[in-house]
Structure formats: structure tokens, C-alpha cells
Amino acid sequence: MRAPRQLAALLFLLCLPILSTAHAHDEVEATLARLDSLAHAHPDDLAPRLRHAELSRLVGDPQAARADLDAIESRSPRHPGAYLLESALASDDRKFAEAERWIDRFLAISDGESDATVARALVLRAEALAAQGNAAAAIADYDRAFATAPAPHADWALARAKLAPPDEALAGIERALVRLPDEPSLVFRASEVEAADGRVDDGAQRLEGFAARVGSREAILARAGDLYAQNGRGIQAEAQWTEALRLIEQDRNYRNVRAKEDLRNQLVAKLRFHPTPSSRR
Image 1: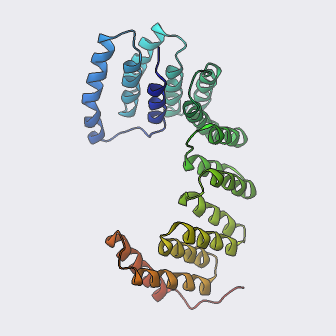
Image 2: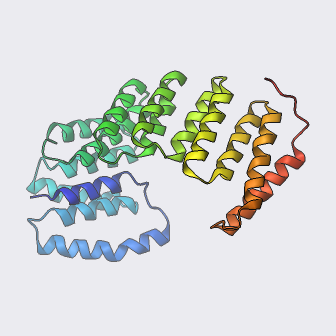
Image 3: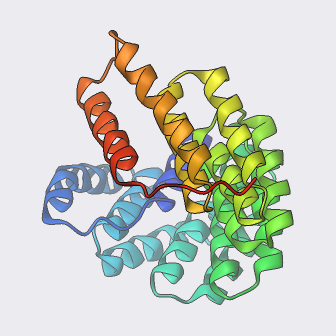
């Protein structure tokens, strides 16, 4: 019988890109050998064989992964983990409709699976749907995954935002921020969507409020300055950059000296070479 933790671990691997470098391949060789030995020693325990299959996929050996799947399916024809791996292999081959069908099969027998596993499966299907141009269905799966997962990922909300029109993209990010209120990538993306919609001040104010709430004000204010500059608001951009530079100069306890110096140099360059602004109030 499969263990929920093992299946959840498989789902984590399925969401990773294929490892193609020689270094990554070398790192998993010993693990592959151990898993193969375990699979032969305990043929009724399918977890080592399933893990071996996914690692084979990750190092670019789909034939070995499919051989493992044949062994798994001969013992357990409706194994949920096998369905998930079949979906990932189909996506690797850009057979996105097939990948979607494998997730459909998984979801049909997923009653005993954890919420985290189901959520990651929904993300895999959302990716397959998006690749087929079915944005509406992909958005629905991302929404369901985000609502289902005990610990949702910001990347899911960002991927969803790329598929949605501006108003709905912002609404989706706002919903994600309810669960992940201090996630910088979501705050930054929301500010960009607002700026692109002509609401530059709203985007900058969002960044300023975030900076006041979570710290690291200088980096976030620098980003607010960039947002103003990209939208022709030179005076406001320079004000934000100047304030960020002032904060850097007065902070004697900056944890990452290299990062502090890099940011300082970037701000000095922007203030030196930015053309004389004309404010559009």
C-alpha cells in the first residue's frame, strides 16, 4: 500500500524541471542504484520503483521511467502515482492533451490522497490546459489548487495571472495575498498590474505599504521608483530612489554587505543618469 508522504514527495519532484546537467545526473546515480536494489528486494512495495521512475525522468531517461511504470502497472494497474508520472512524461513530450487525461484519471481515484497531493495534481493539469490554450479551464484548476493546498505556492497565483485579463489577474492576486500577505512576488506583480492599468500611484502605494510592514524598505522603495520611472513619472521615481539611498547610507547593520553595495551602486547610477524629469500629476 502506498504511503501518502511518498506520493506527496513524488508530486514535488513532478513539479521540478528535468535535470539535464552531468553534475545533476552524477548526484542521483547512487540514489537510483539504491532504489533499484530496494525495488528488487521488496517487489510488493511499489514506492521505491515509483521513485526510481521519477528520478530516471528527471535525469532525462524516459525509457527507464517507462520500464518502471510497466513494472508498477503490472502489480497495480490503477496506481495514482503511476498516473501522475504518466502525465509528467506526456508533458515532457509536449503531449498536453494526454497529460491532461492522466490527471483526470488520477483525480477520479484521489479520494484517499492528501490535499497537498491533489493540489499539485491540479497544478499539473492547469499547466497542460494552459499549453493547449484553454486559459479558462487552467485558471479554474489554479484556483482550485490554491484553495485546496494547505500551503499554496505563490508561483501558482503568478502563473494564473499570466492567463487572465488585467482586472481578473489583479483580483486573483488579491485573493492569493489573503493567504500569503507578505509574499514579495505577489505584491510586486500586483503593483505591476496596477501600473500597467494606468494606476501607477496605486501600485507605488502598495509597495510603500509593503515596505513599511515587512522591512527591507530600501529595496522595495527602489522598486517603487522603478515603477514610477517605467511609467514616465520621473520626479516621483527620483524621490523614491533618493529615500532608498538615504536608508542604505544610515543603516550600519545591513546583513548582506554585498547586496547593500550593489543596491547602492544601482541607485547612484539611476539618480546620476536619469534624465531631468517632468512630472505627470
